[in-house]
Image 1 (cartoon, rainbow, N blue to C red):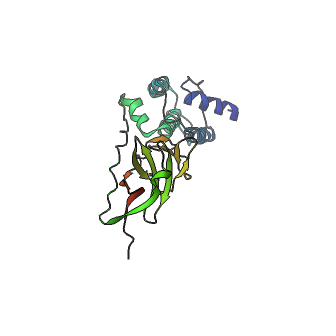
Image 2: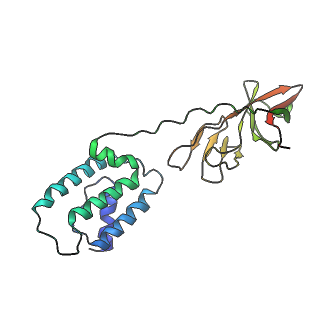
Image 3: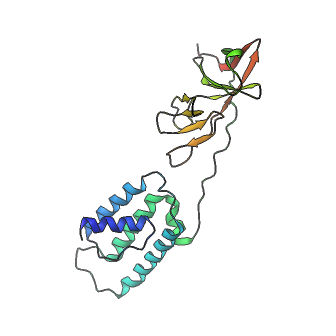
Length: 231
């Protein structure tokens, strides 16, 4: 079988279409597995269609039933049932761990939405100035860093509020994209709203929202309660 036909088979399989039947050899099967894994790694490939899942289930059942009527394979060659089941399982596993169980049993596993983060509350700390009140008009966002704590403060309905400036995925420092009103992570293309909610990401599981920080307005100064530096 040509490489073009193998790629067409993989494209049809992942698109939820019924691929044309053929008898792959070991080289074909390996190329198919590699192509499936590469395609499945693309953004959005972890959401298979209902047609794909139904087709995959029928395909597995048909191949397993039809194998009993086939003549014995030649010595040393992989049986068609083994290759097809292995290829279909590789596709399902690459698209998402829950797909195999869903295709065989009809069950669905849904990842729960990340819970809202509790406010950061250091055991010991002090109020540190981060901005003049006059520099924080309604709707604006200002970045700050006091050494032991960094984040973003904004004024919402006259009250200063703040969120952490550290991505909840792997701790990368966020930067403020003021025109888009986004807090962006430079490490894995994740972005948060200025309120701390996840807006975009390319991760298997959405990271948690940003925790809020304790802030106040005191005598014309915006202050944040920051942890005490270690001795």
